[in-house]
Every structure is written in C-alpha cells, then in structure tokens.
Amino acid sequence: MKKQPIHSQGKAAASGRSIRQTRDDQGERGLRKNAGRYAVSEAPQHGPAVVSETQRPYSTAAPARVVSTKEAGNIVHCLVHAAPEKAVVEHTPAQLIRSLKLGLPVQELDDLRSSLDVSMERLVPMLGISKATLHRRMATGRLDLPESDRVVRFARLVGRAVSVMESLENARRWLTSPQVGLGGAVPLEYAETEVGAREVENLLGRIEYGVYA
Image 1 (cartoon, rainbow, N blue to C red):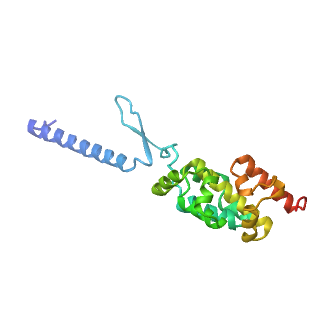
Image 2: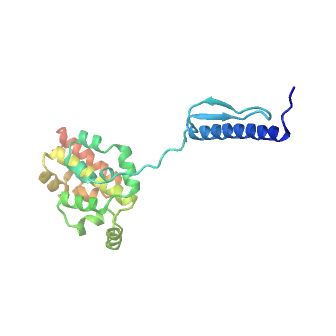
Image 3: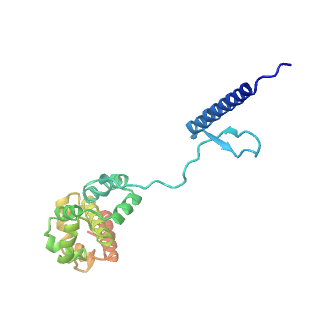
C-alpha cells in the first residue's frame, strides 16, 4: 500500500478537525437558536449531547398588577347614582379593596361633597379629617386607607338613601335632617362610625318596607 507523505497526512488531519469544529459550531448555534423549544440533557463524559423536545419553562411568579384609573376612580359617583346591582358590577368588593388600599383620589372626596351638596368644612369632620390633614391630602392627591374607607361608607349610604327616597334631592334632605328613628340624630352625623352607619342603613330598610315612615 502506498503511504501518503507526512505533510499530506497532517493536512488531512487538520481538514478533519476543521470539519468536526464546523459541525460542532453549527450544532451549538442551532441549540442556542432553539433554546426556547429544546432542552439539552446532560451528556455523558465521552459521548454527544442528547437533545429532547420539551416545553419551555415558565416563571410561577405572578406579574405585578397595575390599578387602572378607571378602577380607582369614579367610585363615589357610581355608588351614589347607579342602581345598587349596577354599582356591584362596576366595582366588585375585590376592586374596592384594592382601590382603598391604594388610596382614593382626593377628587372622590369632592364628588361626595357635591353629591351631598354640603360644604367641605361640614363634611370633613364627619369623615374624621382635620383641616391640616385635608391640606396635606390635597397636596399629595390621595386619601389614606381609613379616610378612603369612610368616603366609600358615606357614598354607599347616599346611594341607599337615593334608592329609598327615589331622588337625590330627597335623599340629601333626609340625610341632613334630624330623624325620630335615630333618636333625633342627623343621619350623616350618626354615620360617623361604622355602627352608626349600619343603624342608618337599617332605618332606611324599615322605611323602604313601610315598617317606619
């Protein structure tokens, strides 16, 4: 058999290494290109990598949720003017809780004042907000959680009164006038606490069903 010259054997070996290197490079690029679709199992010490098709892993962490302006705003207007069943659809309890934790915009407080047609000086003490606190809230643009909760409580009460009294004007008059069913107390002032607000709602319920007029 005719032997190849040494320099020819070296070229052939180099050519073989070049071909293998090219194939290896192409394989690595292919794996990187399909990293989202394929996973490479751990290869044995002396053998090729084994490629199997798998699902791309997904993170189990929930994405951060951004509260939209629509969700965090117009709550008072909806609770006062919308029918009770529509108000529930527009703002579910879960949405209300998120909005309260975020803090209602100060505009919601002004919407409540407008709905009741009372001065801000009369309204804010019933909500437990001092003048100094009101100025700070107007500067920041948002109420805190307890203040937001009381604004929603009053808005629900106004909406309930509108439903029973059949007009916003009648509801305003009733809420700002002394009521025998509350021992002569004014409903809005009586509703400064959660317990008082429930008593006002109970009284409205009795009026609605003709138990008390």
